[in-house]
Image 1 (cartoon, rainbow, N blue to C red):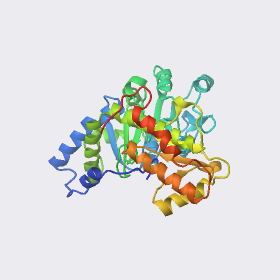
Image 2: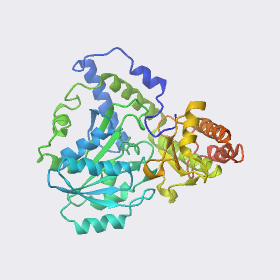
Image 3: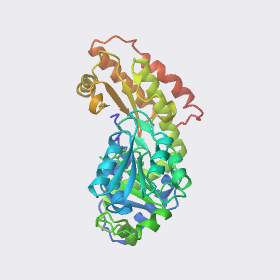
Image 4: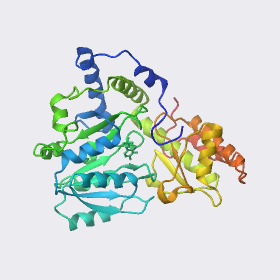
Length: 383
Ligand SMILES: *Cc1c(COP(=O)(O)O)cnc(C)c1O
């Protein structure tokens, strides 16, 4: 499976979720929750508490919006892909006025556009931004955005759902106020858990807001912390404990360097097969998913179908206007160098089945040097 979430779940994690259940208010559970809660903040680059919610990633997005803002508040929303659009949709459901900063798909938001929107709307209460836009394969410069708003009365709410653990992310140092993540992306887990870390600055606001949500109320989460306000997903928490264990074993730095190397190799492999990378700015390409436009005459929907039916390989395609034209190769979570040879092997076999002309073995030849030297400026990691 080479999709940007859900991702491959290592057996070690799967099996730890298959343990006998314990009562969620028992001392044993308290021990597990304490351990998990102590270690989670490190992954977010924060010293703040990280709340664990029983939902998919969208639930965390909704929780952040519902807790940080009130009806008639105005927020900026960075819109350069599906998930940015989703953030705006959620805000509107809560009666929040949105000022969208739109940039073309495949490009990162321009800081000048954000500054301009802010100075034209000095009454905004927050900015909603996606770190790694899974629909387009681009990353937004959250560090720059966070630092700009740090001393302003604007909360920086970041969907780091697919960006966390595949890229450097420093919530406190960058001035991020709410950071969101989910289990089925960098955590290499099944879907079901979502995470929210909240800054001190955000708490000053949150304390004065009566959120229009009960289940997702951050105040309620804080009251029960480190335990869960409602029944937690006990099996998933067990799996999470193992996931954190594995991430710590590898080292977070090594983890995102590995993602960077795999991303670079994927880019080179696709280019070797005649694809054109969708994100022109090499510094803003996602380490989570690589997006590329197929050469003329290659229907990616058909390619994806053959990959799945003939080779058992799941790869996603473009959405919206890019359906049939784009390939989105996911490489988040438990992916190593050798996995990529399988992915490209399958792609080459499928291209051959489709009767398309290309140099056989060219993708493997293109990715091999990167695997050997590691990502640019990065020590090679042997696991
Ligand atoms: C996966 C993902 C989400 C959440 O999607 P769910 O299906 O609700 O888990 C949100 N934002 C981004 C950028 C994602 O990649």
